[in-house]
Image (cartoon, rainbow, N blue to C red; front, top):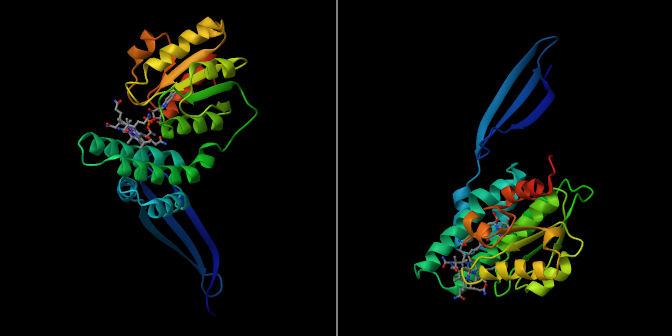
Length: 256
Ligand code: B12
């Protein structure tokens, strides 16, 4: 009697390091009568973070989307694709810009490729959304048009159960003050050293409107530091999106 397949189990196992994706296939083959044979086939799937990084740097929008979808299909978490390929790629783009190897068009093309990837990844970051635990008003401060990082922070907070009011880019202090009424946190983003002072202007405006003591102010963005946050009187600073979620919880005394 010819054999037939009884069970086909496909399981993808992840370790702490999901770059290497081990997969095993257990095949139980029934031979004649009561005789069974068990076979394991195994392999290693490697997601190429370097390739994704390179495609973002070169602004290859279509390839970036394709690789991101491939990564997700292989079980790579959205956060890993962002942290291990997309953000490092933007850092390199920034370095190239600083060294005059890249100019504004290259910066824009890379940013567009990054945005394309984030359009696919953002819903994944926001999965698990529950009843809002607190309200966060977020925006990039006046004079600053950078929003990629701010949008990641917003998505992570949304995914962690916060209600997000996103004011967008180039937001002046009055807009922040208006939106802050009834909010728990005001989150300010700045990517330029020249726009960092707008954070302090916003904090002063919150004080003037007598709502400073009703909201927590959280700041972030590549040029920011904890000491700058302290200097301008912010309640919290985080260097990245994941720690921004922790910081927001900490500021509001939310334990889980
Ligand atoms: C993409 C980009 C652009 C794009 C922005 C597109 C967009 N939609 O955002 C465009 C082309 C528009 C642009 C324009 C300019 N840019 Co630009 N840009 C960049 C670049 C390459 C990447 C920024 C980025 O998206 N990084 C990836 C994200 C995920 O990281 P992130 O923003 O830092 O966010 C993370 C954390 O900072 C944190 N975070 C961010 N916000 C917040 C908020 C809170 C509350 C918290 C808690 C945390 C947090 O969490 C995020 C996720 O982990 C950087 C270089 C760099 N490495 O930063 C230069 C850079 C920021 N740009 C720079 C410059 C000079 C400019 C221009 C002045 C260029 C010009 N001559 O016109 C203009 C300014 C326009 C303006 N008025 O804002 C300089 C700034 C130098 C400085 N120190 O001030 C940089 C550093 C490049 C360089 N090395 O010279 N830019």
